[in-house]
Length: 229
Image 1 (cartoon, helix red, strand yellow):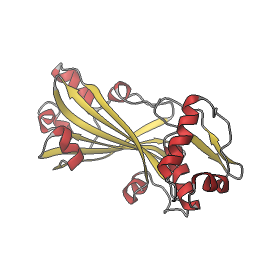
Image 2 (cartoon, one colour; image 1 turned 30 degrees about the vertical axis):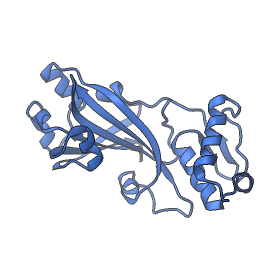
Image 3 (cartoon, one colour; image 1 turned 135 degrees about the horizontal axis):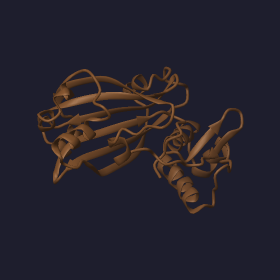
Image 4 (spheres, helix red, strand yellow; image 1 turned 180 degrees about the vertical axis):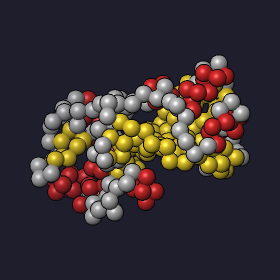
């Protein structure tokens, strides 16, 4: 019976987490992984792409795949405060009123909300493409949410300052997925390569008191240097 990508990635991640595979160690070649886990070459490529997106491994052209030196993600409270890394620039893309997608409505509730999109750029490369879905109650306090321009530094920080209500991140979900056409467009990636590429996805839920006021999703490109600790 054929193996699964999930089994291969779980095995490799467990070895890295336990320290039996250390940063800089080289992973077995594709053919060896195919034999060990009874997978096709495409399935192994897909598994490696997912491991890259989660920050477990990195590839070096012509040399192979190596265990990565994982770094902490700037997220949660720091992103609420508008903190970026040196050399990063935030570019606002749009602010529109829309119906909440199903996964957002599970947290925010059904109905209309404000969808805001932005990118974080370092030089010519986009290092993050993110969206927020914000409850209309917040717009009463931060009316510029309806305007096609950024809030300085973030809508969460502005709402917190004006309302006096602390905004915190109560839930952060991390996963990897094979890049969708929408992901590739947002990150300005080249057309789909022969080998599948994965992106890292972080979802946050923003709360004040006991109320959810916003939901966010950030997408990070393949081979990015941002991982969840």
